[in-house]
Image (cartoon, rainbow, N blue to C red):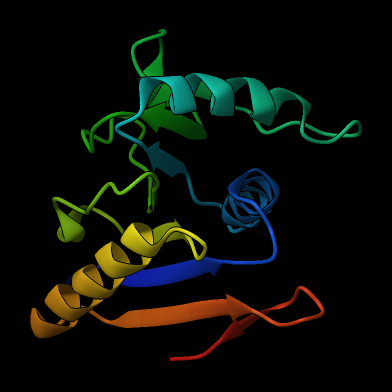
Length: 150
């Protein structure tokens, strides 16, 4: 059975604001997460951000290859090897899913102000739905709440 593929269209909030909240929800569900980005600088910045994004909490995580990948609740990586047996895959910076059967849910997060990112997301939506993958589209309301639009 293939994973669900959810698209988060970022227009009002930044990735740095939204991703930690979604990771917390993923962990609260009892799942592990793999955060995939092809951009080494972004992975490094994300690693630092997740330790300090809120004064009262942090998200336990590591970058792939830093040791004990299999034990990490959240693993930041360049590929989809999934050594931490994550149920949820977050795809950033244009990363596309390679093995949908390896996850329960995949989440594509894209900047709605970047026309190329929007086009890439549309293309991935079309490809995934053509392959029979269950897809959902989420967009923020003017009040900042996430609403399922498709």
